[in-house]
Structure formats: C-alpha cells, structure tokens
Image (cartoon, rainbow, N blue to C red; front, top):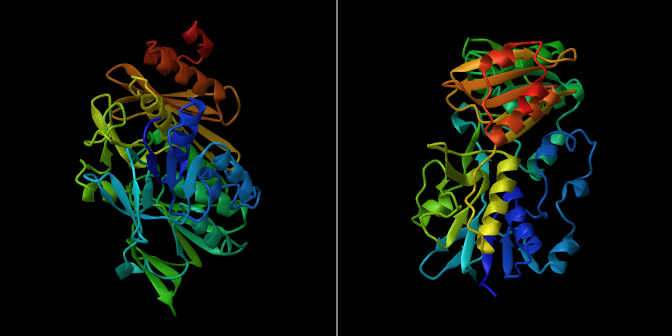
Length: 405
C-alpha cells in the first residue's frame, strides 16, 4: 500500500481527489485537512438556492459523514495548515502538531478580494461570498426593501444581483470597466445579460468606480462613486475577483505565479506535491491559466487521482462553465482567451441566442443563453476538434446538428 496522501483543502477539488481514488480501488491512507467546521459541500448553490432558502445545507454536502468512515478517509475539520516542511514531508497545523505525508495535494482554492479598510472595506454590512459562513451572514441582511450595492460586474456580482432582486431588494451594480463581463465575455453576451438585469429593475453603472464607502457608527450607510455621485445603501457585496491561496506553496519554495504552477500531470516543482483547482496554474494551449470553475476542479482532481493510481494520462482541460440568473441559463463551452472574432446567432426560442468565438479562424468557445442546442453542439465540436467556419454559424438557416454529422 502506498504511503499517506494528505489533502490540504476540503472543497470540490480535495473531495473529488479522495472520492476518485477510492472509486479506482486505491486504498492508500488519505487525510483531508479542511479549514471550515463543516464537511465538504457544493459552493455554487450557496449564493443561489441556499441563500434563497430553497435548499437546506445538508443537500449541499457531497457525502454524509458516514461515507468518510466507510471509505477509510480521515477528515479533520476546523484544521487550517500553517506550513509545509518538504524535507521532512510534514505539514504543520496551527495547533503546532504535524501530519506526515508521502504525497501532498494542495487544493487550497482562492479567496475573494476585499476592499481596503482605508475606503471603508472594514465596515459592517460589507460582504464577500465564498463559503457557508459568508452566505449565512449575508442571509440575515437580504431583506425586502433593503438597498444593496454590488461592486463588480462579473458573474459573481450578476448572480448576486439576480438573487437579491428575487428577494425584493433594491439593487445597484457598479462596474469600473466600460461594460459588465469585460474580462470574460464578448460585448454581445454582455449586452444580452445587461438587458435582462435592467428588465428586472437592477440599476447598472458602467465605467464607474468606488471612491469610498461612508459609514455611521461602524455600519455602511452610503457609497461615493468615482463620478461624484453619493448613493445610500444598506449593504454591499464585493465581487471584484479572487486571489489564489498559494501562500503555503510559496513559503515552501514551490514555483508560484499567481497560483501554484503545475505540469500536465498536476505536479508542482516538487514531484511529491500536486496542486489542483482554483489555486493551480496550468498550461493551456501555450498560455498559463487558472481555470476557476467547478468543472476544472473536478476534472483536474480526478485526472490526478488516476495518475496517483498508476495512470500516465496527462490532464487536458475541456473547459465549460455555467451561470444561472433569474430564469436565464448561460452555458459556456471552451475558453475564449485571445478571441479575435465573434458571431452572434439567434436561437430558436424567444430570448435565446449564442455567441461563437474564433481565434485566427478556429472555433474556440461558445456562450449559449437559454440555448441548449448551441451549447451542446459547440461543446461536442470542441471535444472532437471538428472545424467549423464562422460563415456557417452566421447562417440562420443552418441546422446546428448538421455540423456534427
């Protein structure tokens, strides 16, 4: 039997690694070290169905507590890790004790960026949403009639806006860039998503930053924006991106570059240490990227599990993402990095459309808004590597299924 595998991080990637190893009948000793006081759970529903009160927390758990004992997986909760000693192959816990490993897996995730205290980031009523504790604190504030300011027009901010409107809050969203979704989606996708939010009563200010939050007795009461406007608010959600949790790796002397650098097999610069999920930087078509998604966390962790169990297949990411906002489902296949052309294609149902991305004539990604056929077709085209011409996508008479024939 192989020596102990220690997994630092009890999120999606950490749990998927352990579960896949057991599914592969690899019975090496496994210890999962989780900083939170709860068993591993799904994070995406936290800011949606859980916050809306439509899903109890128990339904978010990947497995009940009994699963860990039945599968001989030791899990330690409320157990943050302080340091890694590569020479002795131990991890030091905050209580001063050590855990010995033969193989170490870092699934430490990422942390939301916060506002500096100098501009009011430490005021009560200012939230980020990443874990159960965040969602529980926010739930007490999400009351009908309350005024919510959202900072950041990415998927996190937009999904928060949709939930808040459903709960009856007044919502204002502020985005510093010239449009929402500027870093992650084409203008056509952003225009469609913006129109949906405006129709739901969200006030959106683009090309607008935050100058400072204004407090009263330690509680946020208003916000001064970069255009000089001052708006009253009862609470603030900060959705301005995340920072990979790579401190442990950096302190241990591993290669770090806005995340823990790994090769195609998930190995760090120390062959006894692997990294996966939001904290890991990997090569994707010649460029270093961090793929922040549930899909990547699971796929990469399961690929590493297969490698640990004796496989030799490198991890080849096949990115896909999704975002639920109101009754709108945005599904994304591929990764639009470096696109130089887009094609907008109306869907067959009212309100449905897709945006197809090309780079140097090659199809690389698709955004599908309430258009499952476009998403499924685009995903299969990417998986098979079958070429498709922009002119074909632009032809509204084309049956997308014919591209797969």
